Image 1: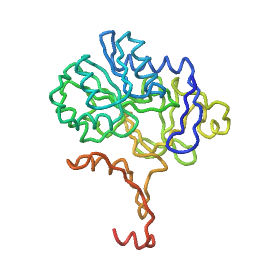
Image 2: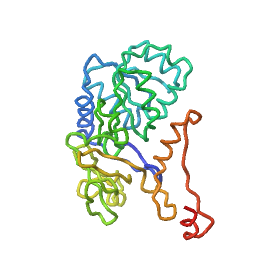
Image 3: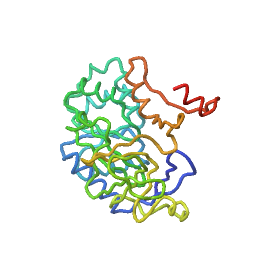
Image 4: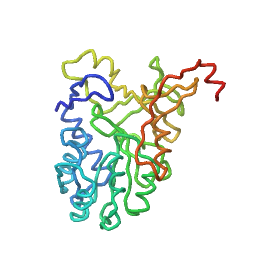
Length: 290
């Protein structure tokens, strides 16, 4: 399968997903999320993207569960279908969970069957995790961190540990190797921040007919994610921001995702985006202002 992806910038590149990549990733979801033929899921994300293909179609095919496909995502309709179909398992982006929580009739829907709520694609605000825990106590929230180049999952957070490690994207999936590298391509010690490189059976071999992009993004079977993060002594992975999105403010590193998560905790804020702008004064003046 060839899925076109451009990350956050640049021209789309054809990621070559081999049969073994796709089967391996589907097995990760089936095993780590303990999916069975009793599970029922809704596909509310595009089926032409890696999440739709692997997380929705292939994972449910692996466990012989039921898949309900929506033509588009509308929060009110999604909740109505989830309640009617007794859905047990979903994977969505954080914004979709937020839109569901904003529905005035949210509490009127019986969502007690919903046991697994996977998420990825963007940082999940702490406030959203806390609201979902209150509204649906039986729901296990599982962070799935990955990309098209890793055929979806690289890490998964065990649902019972989400609250304890709320700032982490989880543990490396079985078979995945995750390292943090400096600008010169040297592995950094645990706890230090650098670029996350990902290796393993889920990582693609490269981009279709694009040897230059392949050489720039892959080294020795590892894919350069472009994400800044760290790995702690217990193997929990943290992702702070895209490498190109980090804001340098008078020599201090500011991760926009962290600020946005704090803003999301305010009852008057639905979503936010932090954008850097050049300081009109000199660097020394900026430092004095702090």
